[in-house]
Amino acid sequence: MSTKTQTPVKVTAKDLPLHCPTPAMKLWNSHPRVFIDVAHSGEGKCPYCGTVYQLEGPAPTGH
Image (cartoon, rainbow, N blue to C red; front, top):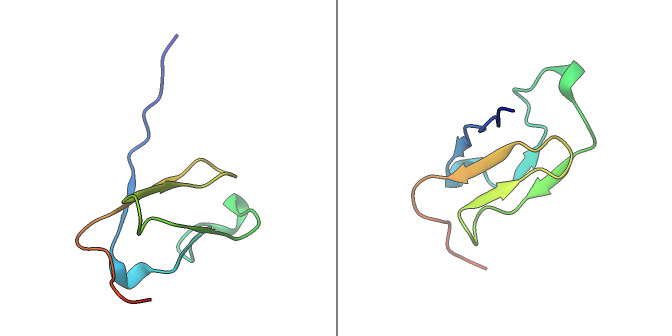
């Protein structure tokens, strides 16, 4: 039995607010849009497709 490890999708502060699916994803791979919070923990996972997003660099500051 093999376990597949998924490589996180790297995002930066300019990609926020982050939602999945992203505009770069193929239409056949789409699902309802959901916003992913990566600013607090540095990482987030889409509850629909399981894509893992990882924030690179500093988190944005502000409200």
